[in-house]
Amino acid sequence: MVETHPDPARDRTFECTVEDGQGRASDPFPWAQVGRDAIARMAGDAGLDLVQCWETEGRSFCRLVRA
Figure 1 (cartoon, rainbow, N blue to C red):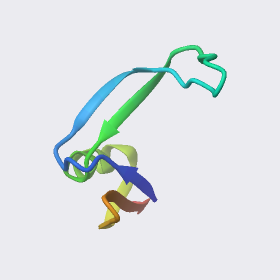
Figure 2 (cartoon, rainbow, N blue to C red; figure 1 turned 90 degrees about the horizontal axis):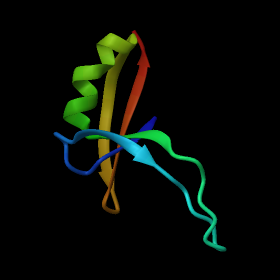
Figure 3 (cartoon, rainbow, N blue to C red; figure 1 turned 135 degrees about the vertical axis):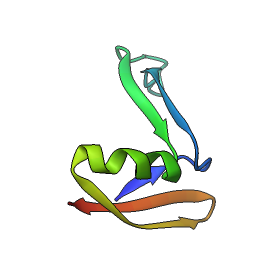
């Protein structure tokens, strides 16, 4: 199960940091925002099958299984 971006077509990669309550930031690390349509296109290349997608309380999720 993965949480996907609410925009189904979203496919964006970038560097991200995480900041704690005291304002200390992590080193940058790669991150991606991927919507359900984009993840459906990528699943096969990763050896996965997309079997289900749903939305709840403004959040989007997909379930993938090994192909």
